[in-house]
Structures are given as structure tokens and as C-alpha cells.
Image (cartoon, rainbow, N blue to C red; front, side, top):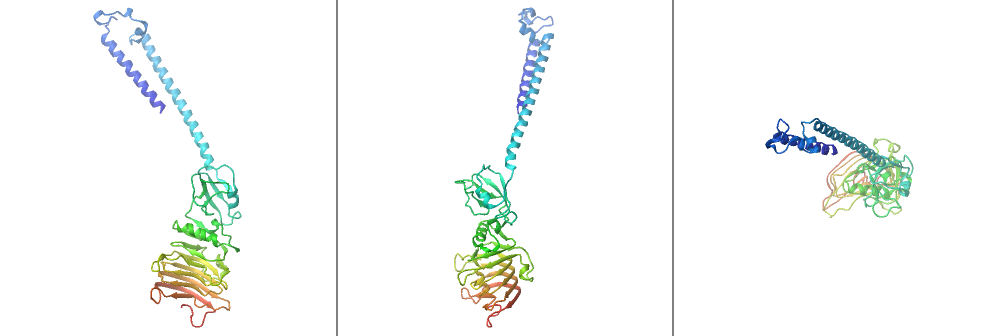
Length: 373
């Protein structure tokens, strides 16, 4: 700090003056003559005379020096305060640029933006396709990021080449509509939901499914450790009370809706998360709602289904899995082979440690199979 340096200099001046006074008093006699008669007072130069503390002029000079030093220090302090205030004002102005949050109405508007980008600046995207469609996300601009664009938590504007990405402020709380899922029962949402699951798999997250009816045309791959959670509801209410709906509309026959990713080896397990609070509508081309091979620790609950499936749950090699509160209704003429299909694994008749609780099953099943096969 500048005041510290001035105080130090002032202290040095005082120390020097005191030393001069002590030296002069050591050699000066009471009659103003110097010891040993080397020189008399009147023969000294005016500068020397003025330096002697015994003269009024010297005292005045010292006092004036002190006053000047204090004035200089006060001026420096004022200057430093002004400089500090100016620096604070400049910092506040710079911070205000970063704090000022941009507003984008939609994902498309965000991607089309061609204005200035400020590193660290935040942006609120008020919806994916329209304001308030559950696609809201808060992001910040990272000028150095080269992360892969995923349409959700990582977004690269169209005009940007090289580094520079919008990144989610909170990437631990995600939903499928932030990745582009429509939820209108018409547009294929498979790729959008898969993108959310893929991101969650690399970060150990839960994927939320907001209210809507999501059309799926192929198969969604469930990844290790990822859970897919719809809005909470009562499993024993009618389908209309399930706010998060998946409608399976595959073109090809015998297509599964959800399939657990393939195990690394035939005898290894895949640590499975879970699926909760969904109502699933099958079609004539749907085989299994859930096709799970070697799942470890799966926890599926509060699931409702309608229309025909070959089986709702197909299991192979499961370990420590739990399924509860399923409401399975087949109102079509097409028979289901079984609500739950248990397949052999490694010579065993069934997997091990699998619990089923509170299943309500009604509708058309094959006469020989029943609920579990």
C-alpha cells in the first residue's frame, strides 16, 4: 500500500533528523561554539545553521518538513482511496456484464444467436420449442469449452466454430425436454430421450420425464446406473392419472421399448438403475416393455401399461432386482404370453433374488402362461 511506504519514509526522515541532532549536540558547546574550537557558530553556512535544532529557524524548518510530509501522506491516501474507488467501480461494471443474464425464448433462438459472447455470462433458455414447455434451462458461456454438443446440457451455437459452448449451470438435474423431447405423442422422441440417458450415464444421474406423451418409434437403451423417473402418481389409478406417458409406435415387428445395454460378457452384470412413474402404451409391433439381460439391483416401480405386449417384463440372469406396483391391462384381442417372462441363464432355470410386489394384471393372456412364465 502507498500509505505504508510514505509512513516508512517519514519514519526514516525522523530517524535521520534525530541522529543529526544527537551528533550536533555531542559536539556543540553551551556558548554556541563547537568543541575543540574548530569553528564558531557564526562561521557556519546558513544551511548548517538552519539544521541546528537550537535555533528557531531550524525548529520551524523541521516542523514545516513534518507538515509537508503529513500533507503528502494525506494526499497519497486520498489519491489511493480515489484509485481504489475507481478500481471498484470498474470491477463492478465488469461484473455487471457477467451478471446480466441473457434471455432466449427457445433453443432455436439460442442456437441462432450471433451477438457478443462474454466468458462466464449466464443465459436463461425459457423453453425448448416454446416458453414454458418444461424445457427451461439455465446455462453459462464457456469460451474455452470444446465439449461435444448434445442439444441439452452442452450447446454449440450455429455460428461458432472451434471453442465456445453454452454449458448447463446445474447439470445434475436434467429432464428429457431440455434435450428436445416434444411429449406430444406425434413426433419421435427416441433420440432426445436417448441423448439425456447417455449424458446421465457418463455422470451418474437421474433423468426426469416431465408430464407429456412421448412417442417412441424404436428402442431406448437403458444405461448402467441410470434411472428414468416420471412424475409421481398412484399406480392404481386409471391411465389418465399417469402424467408421464410413453407410447410405443415401432414400424418393425417384435421391437422392444426399453432394453438394458448389453453386458460386457455373457456372465457379467449391468448395474441397473430403475424406471418409475410411467404409463406405457404398447402396439401390435411391441415385444417387451422392458428387456433386461443380467440386470443387477434394478428397481422398477409404479408402472402402468395398456394394450398388448408379448410380455411387459422379460428378465434373464437378474440379481437383487425389485419390481413393485405394476398395473398391467391388456384390452386388446391380442394375447400376451406372460406379464413377466423369466428366461434361463447359465443353465439355471431362472435368475436369483428377484422380488415382485403388488402387481395388478387383467386382460387377455395365453391360457397356459398366466402372469409369470
